[in-house]
Length: 385
Ligand code: NAD
Ligand code: MG
Image (cartoon, rainbow, N blue to C red; front, side, top):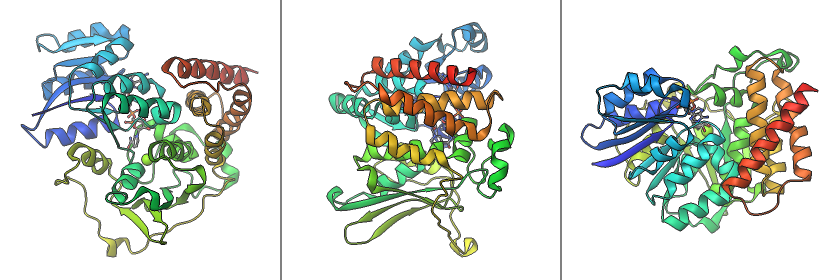
């Protein structure tokens, strides 16, 4: 039996991962599950999957978790150190599906085991790509991408000579406001930004899809993971979310990955890698779909997207600054302090300020944390002003 752990088990990716594990009885031993505020879900999943260890990120919820798992024999813990402990429990395959930069330290701890890290947490590549890859290399660990676009690129590259890659095209659905009159965007609310036309995901990534901050993160993620030049990466709006990414080769060929918008494909691919096995995802009926549309993203609608290239050209800690500014702006949007379009405007300003004195030194967990902290403070000051 393969030993598996899920960091961020109670979220959208975590639940889809558990669904696939449940469908393969006898194949996986669940080692550790982590969650946040949803103690009932965490406890239910820990019991159902017979996990060895369950941890919540929040120390104040330890008693609730203890009570919910009383008599189960499952060990429980809480707080940041507990997340690290979950990542360090011996496992062959670990899903990194915490949302935000909070997933970085547990992901690094998981890599130190030298097994396989299925990486949904794009923020760890954006904030600390070189550190993540070096940690994997040092410990002989493997990172498999779980973001659907990156899984698609990974699959399109199988058997190919990396030197023959000319470009990579990442698709974007266009999010909740793709067809909204531009003049209405400033007043777009949290609830409407939290609905996605094609994908069912956590709230934060769903809002980031409407603003295309998510696509900006994914562009940087692709650069880091596949060692691309910034100008080799393109983004196309593709409303059907059926072609997830394409890889263009020097002979002009494009290899596209086509599949239903269901994260269980990318998760299942990483779970079964290097094999392909049956997955409970819909089979596409291309005749019923009829057409696939592609268009260039409108910079006026998605001002966040271009920031990715600014970040990539500066390098160093620019990704950590960008991500922290984005996370904090999103907090303020969700709290109702700022409008939808203010997010990208404020992140652009914070990025400009931050890049002037961005640390150029080596990227370490500590340096990323420092950057993250300072940037959040800057963002708060900007909003309070
Ligand atoms: P989610 O909000 O549904 O779940 C997030 C998980 O992280 C939960 O288990 C939550 O308890 C935990 N968490 C939240 N804050 C935490 C903190 N501070 N410390 C520790 N744990 C914390 O998010 P999601 O949509 O499942 O996304 C998870 C990650 O996967 C993100 O990085 C996201 O960008 C990426 N991703 C998600 C999808 C998707 O379909 N949902 C697709 C591609 C990539
Ligand atoms: Mg994606």
